[in-house]
Amino acid sequence: MTDAVPIMRVGLRRSVERVWHSPTLTTWLSLGIRLGGLAVMLPLVLTHLATPEVLVWQMLSTITMMVLWVDFGFGPTFARVIAFARGGGTRADLVRTMRGLKAAPPAATPDDHAPLDLGAVLRTQHAIYIGISVAAMVVAAVVGTATLIRPIANLPSPSAGWIAWIITAFASQLTLLNSANVSILTGFNRLAWVRRIEAANGAAQIGSTCLVILAGGGLIEIVGCYSFWLIPLFVVNRIGARKLEPRDANGKTSRFDRSIFRLIWPAAWRSGIGILMSVGIIQSSGLLYAQFVTPAAAASYLLILRLMTALAPIAQAPFYSKLPVLAELRGAKKHDELCRVAIRGVALAHWTFVVGALSILYIAFPLLKWLGSSVPSPDFWMTATVFLAFFVERYSAMHIQIYSLTHHIVWHIANGITGALMIGLFFLFVPVLGAVAMPAAMLASYLGFCSWYASRLSLQSLDIRRWTFERQTAFWPALTLIAGLLVYRFVVQGMTL
Image (cartoon, rainbow, N blue to C red):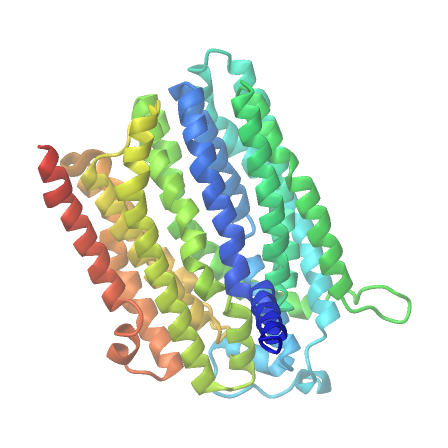
């Protein structure tokens, strides 16, 4: 018995250490705190603020996400290149993979076959983000202000809405700059450390904001308290990133490298176009709805978008947390291990999405109604279409990420064509489907093009058969989601008719 106690302690300590250093589990911890906090904060907002105020609060969150799109794909691109350089990749290797070549081009200089200068990569990133920050402020000032004019005019105190917007505009810049720090830390495979910091910060951010709401705070106080916590988050991540940056003999980071920028720019702008033509269109639809429909209808649509936006990072954690490892495995040419890690991550991501989506349908919406939310829940067909559309979007996005490990970026093709289809189908569906037109267009466009295009390239890069991959990843989660929706419609709702 006495021998068993130390063994149990060692086992417990090792279990805690595995959780503490696991990118997936710490990502779930961070996002779980934010999702749990949102589960508390969202009902408080919906029951303490009037519908016009809820609409403006939701739009401020959407505009903050729009500011992050000005990143234009540099964040994930630099994370992959940093991990690639740490894995010993050369400039020639990067040229080959970026251009989708089977063999490296002839070396222009002897340095082309030397490992990438990691310091130069990081210094190039710093310079680029200065320009990105300026562009983001312009986007916020023009697009954000224009879309908020009508909703803020409906507030009891429009001045409060404009003050909340100014606070949000400056806070969004910190969020953007923090993404640069996170990409460095991700490239160095410090994702578990990042998520632990985010978990602590998120708990403080959401906890204090909930106290402000309960104390009777209005829109300004809620937005101000929530935004304040972005300052310590940025500072801590910046300090962590700087400790990893290589220094020369004078203690300075390597200089900006235009040749690295020229290599990275094609991948970045293609990723950026892909993001704008996918997530950009989907989230912007909420801002457009607010210009033409009642505050209640717009707030209802933004409610489900907000819930799906909260669910998406939780669901993608098992896969996206493995991207640094997958990039290193690709650089080290460990194909079998690459396939195993990718399959496990994609499968867990799909199952997490399905559980989360059905929880929103079966638990969250009835709970909000019971609490007396000022915003009505969307109807079943809107909800079901959004769930299915986001499932196929997540499926497509993960396959694009797998193929992007080759550094041959096709986001601009996959999401560009999908986005164009989405816009065209939206105008085609509006006369028939009304408010459901946008999620229906999203579902049809992803099924019609992006899903099969992205998966074909991804599976070819992994050299694996489609059924071998899909039966271990997407097939059973998709069936479960459809079954859950059908049961709710014909059993749960049927009992109340």
